[in-house]
Image (cartoon, each protein chain N blue to C red):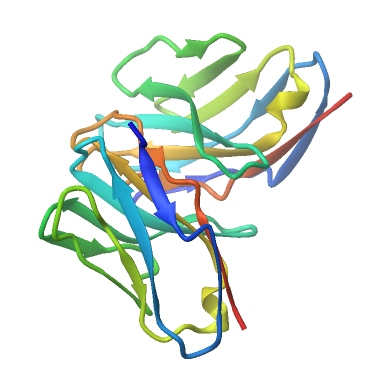
Length: 113
Length: 113
C-alpha cells in the first residue's frame, strides 16, 4: 500500500494562476479531506468528501474547488491563487464511521507570490 | 459545532522527564472519539493514541497515556521518559463519527538534552 499520496511536494505560483493539487489513496477509504496548515492556526478543513460523487465545504472553502469522481482520487483546485493561500496542504483519508485512524499524505508546500 | 482548544502553544521538557499536554473540547455529542497526532519536523502526521468516549479506562500506548475526563471535556496527553525523538507538534483531534476530524491549533513540544 502506498497509503495517501500527494503531488507536488512543493509549488510556487504567481498571483492569479490556477493549479490542481493531486491526492490519491489506495486503501478504499470512503472519507477524504483537505486541510491547510498555517503557523499558529493548526489544521483547518477546506473541503471533504464522504464518498465518490459527494463533497462538502469545510471551515475555509473560499478560493478552492474539489471533486470526487472516484473513491481513490480527491484533487484540490485553486481557481486564482492569492498570497493568502500560501500554506502547507494536507490530504487525508479514513474509513467511514467513528474512531478509525485518519491517514495523511506528506503535504504540499505552496507559495503564492 | 465542535471545537478543540490546546491552550499551550509551546512547551519544553528535559530528556527523561514527564510532560503533560492539555486539550479541552466542546461538544453536545455523547459518543465520540478523541485522538492525539504527532507531527515531527518531517511534517508527516502520525497517530499517537486514541480514546473512545464511552470507555472509562484511559488509553495507554507505551510511554504515552491520556487523562480523559468526560464530564470536564478534557483530554490531556502525558509523555513519560521523554526522548529527543518526541520533539514535534502535537495535535488533539475530536471525531464525532460522521464528519471530518476537528483539530486543535497544536502544541509545539521541544525535548532538551
